[in-house]
Image (cartoon, rainbow, N blue to C red; front, side):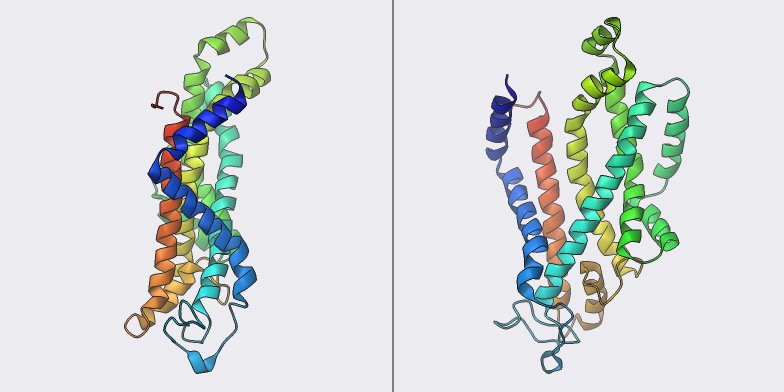
Length: 281
């Protein structure tokens, strides 16, 4: 089947599923908020001391914080931070983890045991615990958050890539390529890597929401983005003091984190079903 026809069939299968379509809408909304929102909401650091802790209104759709800063502007700029942390950390994990997994799975004799023992050691630490430790070493900043979350995601990417390579390496078309005299590089880039793409795409959609939650957690703990830079985690830290008087300060960033992560998870579930050739029409 020609690639355009295959893509059209996959899109038909995807759009017939209401939950993945809902996830796609949420993800697109999140990206638009991060890219367009800061252009229309104004300066997130602008203070109005006459409107501190003001409830949602026409002038401030999401209310204001203790310094009179518009919560909607801070939510929009915080979406940028979350998008950068989620996408850049996942891209870092993929860029480093995929080559390591490919090499470990393809050259199994001596390299694979060494790589997998190192991976097993890192997997002994929960994702967020590992990220908190790295962030504490790297220092509080968006750059430190991206590096901490990226390296925390490495073990999962390496294991998934290696497992796929081990399975694909035993396929008949790979054996035929070896019999024809194809080199290792040709086999890896022509046969192995393209057939690993589907599970890795799904893994990316799972890793991005985990990174979004990780960034909010690190910022909440003071190990991530630092004030006055807007971040959903920083907003939640401030909101602790005003839960009784201004609950919207905690509600809005909490809702945005939940919607962003829900969107990517629903999208990932849909992509997993669509990209699986064994799934139904």
